Length: 187
Ligand code: HEC
Image (cartoon, rainbow, N blue to C red; front, side, top):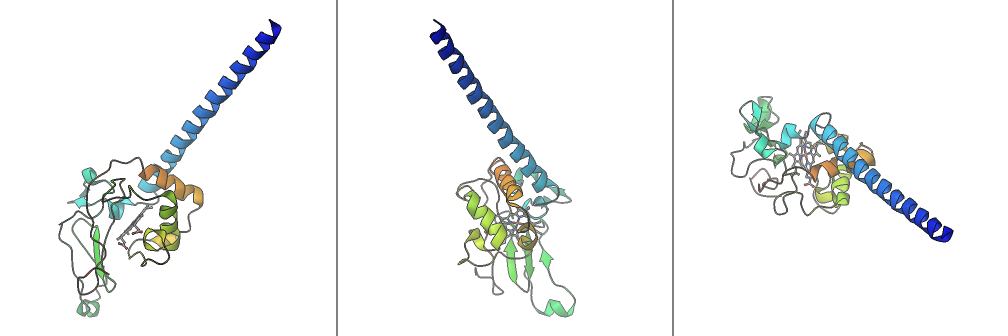
């Protein structure tokens, strides 16, 4: 009888421990997402370029979905340099043209075909750290004005929190153009 009681007590203890650990890990996951949201929406200001504008306001249906497919974009030419012009932007403030060519803010939502749905956490962290497309050093550099030089200085915990949050935003199907060279062709 007392042996059974002992087994019962151990079982209750183990189940209690498992429940506590599960709750803690769910909580720390949601803390991480909250921190990520804070970094994206405040200090990181990712939407400044990645959420297109409709007039003066952000188009929240396109939250972090990048430059809208088929929206017009400006084309820089070098004669503008003499007029003191260095970067042009589209009315959505999500496409940029300068001496580097033309770049389009990427779709950061988890849409599988057009966003970061197929990316891994490692690809994201490495892209932010190395400044190379998809975090692969053999790929092209990520174009201006994406501030990888600054974001790359964030610690692992913050970059992982941003990634955790980006996984939770609404997926939006929006095929963003790759960057273009001066002749308007993909690099
Ligand atoms: C000043 C504008 C700007 C801001 C602010 C900005 N980005 Fe970007 N981002 C861009 C542009 C433009 C591109 C496309 C560059 C390219 O195609 O090479 C880009 C591309 C990316 C990519 C894709 C990189 C790749 O491998 O192709 C990721 C991921 C990304 N940004 C994440 C972020 C996150 C997260 C934040 C906020 C912490 C952020 N960006 C803030 C302009 C910006």
